[in-house]
Image (cartoon, rainbow over all chains, first blue to last red; front, side):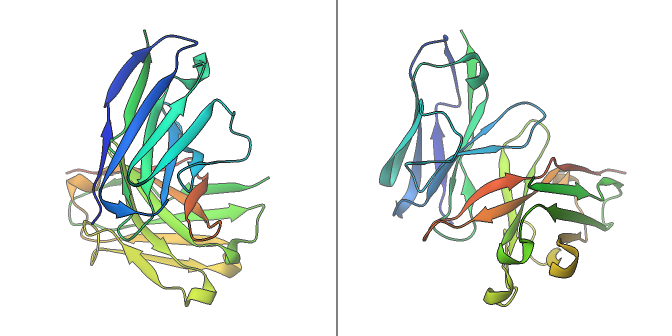
Length: 107
Length: 123
């Protein structure tokens, strides 16, 4: 199974900041990675698929990049509604595996 | 509007069984693979398994942690996917989500999620 190591596990940031979250895969993949945002008590929401394609309706301050083993989610100009937990998910092979999550908190 | 609604969660004793349902509306259910994902209290997301659509012969995939105990099935006439959970363990305690698999090209992603249903395994 492909292991996804996500870092950091948490971070503190201010409104207007740029934040970067990383997922590293235990083996090389193509672009088979998505990013999800989850707020407390809610279902996750798809932000990015195929490593860098923004899901319809998601603000352009979110962006994704990477291929192979290293993938990044960036959030520019952090907004109050962006404080949440973020997960990566690899869909390169079964079993699908999530990263451990990154909690973005208000500084 | 596109919706997924899970039901069937509850309290069950270790070793017991439970069947979850997920009913879809607002889209052509039969054209999509459907997955189950769970989240233990205070923990991260864990993929549980997949039900592929008819053109893929309704085949299924499972996480190692549930294989042999859980069974995913679907009824396209009812726009529903099911998760039959047997031999439940305390570590199966989680919120269970169903999710629609969006397949743009060679990639898969979960673009629609249900609200989740809580399963508690405890004596």
